[in-house]
Amino acid sequence: MATAEKKRTPNTRQSTETQPALLAPDAFAAALAGIPSEDWSRTWAANRTIALRRTSKKVREEVDKMRLPAVVCLSRSFWDDSRNGTGEAKVQFVWRQLAAMTARCLITTLALPKCDIRENVEQLAGLLAQCPALAHLDLRSNNIPQEGACELAGVLGQCSALTHLNLGRNRIGELGTGRLAGVLAQCSLLAHLDLSMNFIGCATLEIIGGVLAECTVLTHLNLSGNRIGNSRAESFAALGRCTALAHLDVEFNGIGPAGAERLAPQ
Image (cartoon, rainbow, N blue to C red; front, side):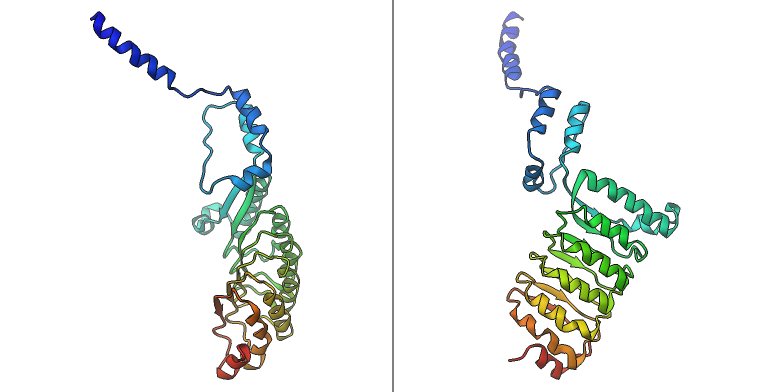
């Protein structure tokens, strides 16, 4: 029996010695506090998770200050469930949650399709002003009117990280398109733009065509369903300068062979 105990002793000692050292809660909190917030948002790996179990209040407070990247997508099951209140009640609930998130996270993706936020665009604009890291914004099918598009244009120019903007199937019209054209050039990283079915007016076609031609990294552009027609297709001839453009959608615009020649002159 004594011999057996002697054989087990070294194994027990080895197991204890190889266990990782645990950092005291206060020391861990101090270590977290020493990391600049911009380093967390710049280097945090995608899909990485911080799990805090039975930790100290100080550690939780420091983690709350990190403002890690966040992806926010509206659940259709929430929106379609009548038990969650009226449409307006749901929208206000979403705004409250998003306002709380902007204080604790860096929202990089915000997808709010089919939320009927036409009466709440001012609130949305205020929210976007708090999202400097926003890269992907999906607001398709929200009945956003011209005045609402002007509100958005006032803050989109501040979203210097924006790469993907979907405003398809809204009602931004000629006035809204003109205001957006004034700020899109500031989004130097914009690669994907969807302005389909937005009643774009003929007066702004040439303006927006020239602005988009300066978006040097634009790879995907959707202008379908805007009634461009043959005579106005030439307004987008400047897109020929978009050397990165790989996908251009202009279907349902009444553009025939003559319009195609104006759109892409030899």
